[in-house]
Image (cartoon, rainbow, N blue to C red; front, side):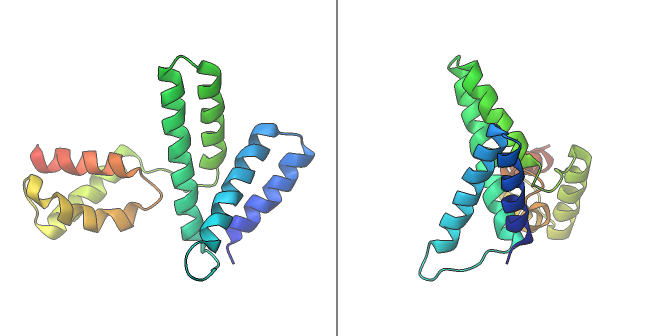
Amino acid sequence: MSTLKDQLRTDLTTAIKARDETRTRTIRMALTSITNEEVSGAAAHDLTDQDVIKILTREAKRRREAAAAFAEAGRGEQAAAERAEEEVLAGYLPAQLSDDELAALVAAAIAETGASGPGGMGQVMKVVTPQVAGRADGSRVAAMVKSRLTG
């Protein structure tokens, strides 16, 4: 059983009692996504904390993309609501890697694989991705790897 999922349930109760609508709505959405993931597939299964982090990361990315789309369409109030939900989800995710930390991991992976040029991007990504899981957005990692291999 996931302790992160238990924490979400506890925080949902607290948010409901505090009448915090944004937090309540966001945590309910997250728990629904987790439950849907648990019951999908051939057999129902309990998720580990890593699985829950992947789901929360995916939901945070959806909020970020929705906020950008709303802002671009001139719907500032809805964009702000999406950003607020993303902030709630960020509280349950591991701390994001700084640019320096990410650069160090990418440099180590390049040295380990001996990759050079854009053709080696797949090799480097295969090494870096498990190390940064949940701590850096995939597009950010890919951009860093690409810049190191081409520059």
